[in-house]
Structures are given as structure tokens and as C-alpha cells.
Image (tube, rainbow, N blue to C red; front, side):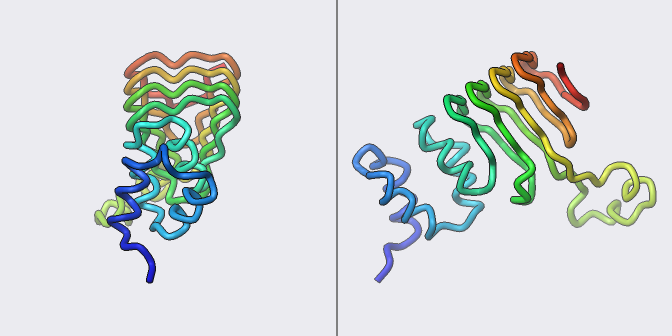
Length: 158
């Protein structure tokens, strides 16, 4: 009989130091993507945060650092790429797929034409995203670029 999801979550969250890579991967495979993303945002260990995000389609380069509470909205469409040695500070939000969900606004012509967007967000190598920054669809943060804390990024940063 398979281990209950609550047990799997608890072991991944608190007993992770005792688990080997194959065991972690097997446990991840049993979880829904929403729970895997939650673990990615909340887990105390940077290495496992990256493993959880990768398991949900986020591309993350070697040596990148993903601090706590990274929120990614991409509908699991593999729209987000984080380059080698990039540094993502705490409480960063990446919106690659934006829309009003179930609101009737989704049918408004302007909203349909201009505001419902799904586009890649690329953070290149050695970039640094400051705490609380928000990156919107279509953003490219260039190699070695710095995004200040609390910034809302709507276009390319060279």
C-alpha cells in the first residue's frame, strides 16, 4: 500500500536529510503538482526547492539559488527559465501566465486582447532578483542584471 500523501509531505519537509535522491524523486512522483510547487516555495533546503520546481517544469541552471517563497504562475506550461548562478531573493513572484481566472472580465474585449497573456519569463545567468520583486509575462532579465527589491518588471532588463 502506498504511503499517504500527508506522510510523504511530512517526510519530504522534515526528514529530507535522511532521504536519498532516488527516494526523493519517487516521493515527488506521487504528489500532485500543486503540492510539489508548495514544497518548492516553502522548503527549508535550497537544493530541494530547486528539485521541486524542476519537477513542475521550471528550468533552473546549476548553482542557482532559490530563496523561500518563490511564487510562480505559469499553469505548468514550462514558461520559466532561471539561468546558472542566478539568485532569486525571498518573496519573488514570477507571472508567466496572467488572466482573471473565473471573473466575467475574461470575456471583456480589452482584457481578452491585452491582458490575458502567457509568455516566457527568462532569468539569465548571474542575474540577481531582489526581495519581493514581481516579473510579468515576456520579461527577460539579462546576464548579470540586477532587479531591485520590490520592483515590478514589465520588460527586458539588460
